[in-house]
Amino acid sequence: MKKYYLGISLIIFCIAGFYVYSTYNKPHKNLLNQKAEFVVKPDEWILEFDTDEVKALNKYLNKIVELEAEIIDIQTIENKTLWTLKTGSEMVNIQCEMDPRFVKEALKYGKKGAQVRVQGLCSGKLMDIVLNQVVCLNK
Image 1: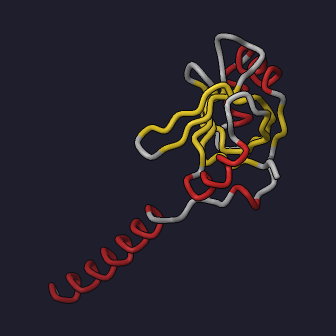
Image 2 (image 1 turned 180 degrees about the vertical axis):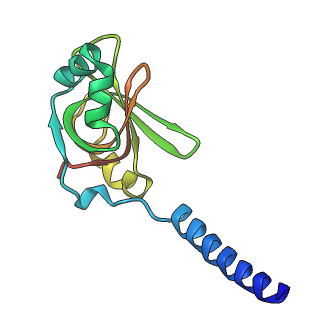
């Protein structure tokens, strides 16, 4: 009887382990082929977060957002390319962590002072609004 329960437990453990492993290693969505859920203007977007941050987070968190703005800074930190986009506010900018699969393509259009159209997943607002898995839509 103990062997029976041990066998069943082992099977359940293996299934649970496979589920956790496959979920953890699930690839990111390719945002280049996805339609944005929101198209925003940077200055209006900042105002929306400043007016009611909780409401804005509920609306935009983990959603695909598209916007067009000027690049004011480009950094590479630990193999991550970060673009800082200009907004209407001097205090708040938009931080874009570029999708590593499309960085080479994005760097063709991404120069300081260049106007770019990007989309990414909104991760919220710290000091700046943060977008992850960002792809450049300029062609």
